[in-house]
Image (cartoon, rainbow, N blue to C red; front, side, top):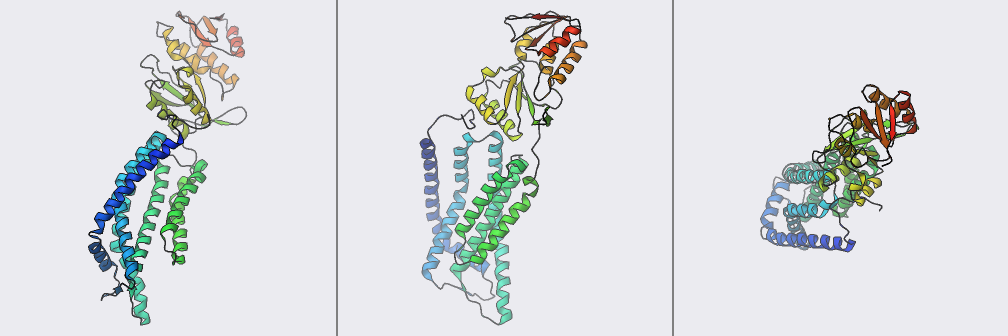
Length: 431
């Protein structure tokens, strides 16, 4: 396995995904065609109102010099209106198609971005057509008055330029909102900034170049520089942000100076696994029964991916209780796994003693050194009334610990040697 799989993923062939994409895209195109036909019935009144807003002259100075170009522009306007009104349906289809392949935080960010973009698109269109473009054309027309020229403008050309500028504004707002939503959701940081830049700038500029009229090279260059600059300005802080931190995660250094992030997965296992505090520097997330819940498994994958956890320590869940594909996904993210088996440890006692749980936590190594592990384990033992420690490779079935006994799973030889110096009886259980 060389990729990440969610619990909702199945082993469908690529062709089935292409068929689903084609089916959804076809429904959107059919809806756009229908809405274009509907808008074409009233497009003349809408264009008449738009031309009145965009006319820079006191007396009308916009004319149709090429009826065929005007007819093409008229249908283009109806099509764009059809696209805009079909956008909510297209967004629902896009989310339904992509949902199963997105992590929980990515789903939330996608929905938030679509909602924000819908409001921004509508607001920018109203602002552009009623305020910005009328001011821009009036400002440009004022130069004709200064030079004593009489302005005569092509309605089709003015409308095409207006559409290009409006589309450019929407694209820039879309790119800026993607950066902001991804950054605030902690999906974007310095480590993956190049990945985000390539896709955001690439998609935005491709769509910009697609709609800008070929006869306006100056507008093409100006909008390219302006759009890229705005996206970089908005994303200045996010593109340079440090690795995101949450759930109490801290960067831990091993003996070689390597950086690690260890996350304690506190699973109650439906109440059979008690809660204990993790070691200093470890983060912690809590679940009810992660080994049985695909939703909780996806959430843990999301946390591991977003916050770059390098090791997961499960409380009560055994590693082999998870699907093999899930453990493979964690390995794909560069994350090791380990279990304290607290559910079995807690069942070995009837006196509510927690020393076995504390020793299980203190026995962790990597990134901690063996010397540090021995010191903190001895501190727990010295502060207890334990007189016998039973140890073995795994917890034996039916283990019943008495009040002055404790259990350690697979202890290091150095720890056993130090315990022996304390005069505590060591009993090996080979199960």
